[in-house]
Length: 105
Image (cartoon, rainbow, N blue to C red; front, side, top):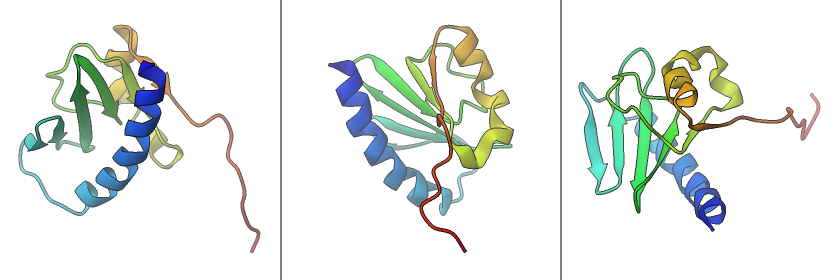
């Protein structure tokens, strides 16, 4: 059941992350009750609901010690360092299995 919730949350996060990357934050900012953005060398997003955490890219502030999942996208493989500690502390790393080409130029 948590998996289905995470999938629905993932779709929402994509839209939110696109919005958030356009917004400049000088320090951790709570966007909503369950959404926090932290800025550093890489911007991180934490979604917390029902006692579970989903982190996008990682936590550059190093304030979060535990998470259920860390989402890494194919565009930002250079920021794995921001989520490494969370994965080493038991978080499941969500990564793209393989790159799918939808069109050719």
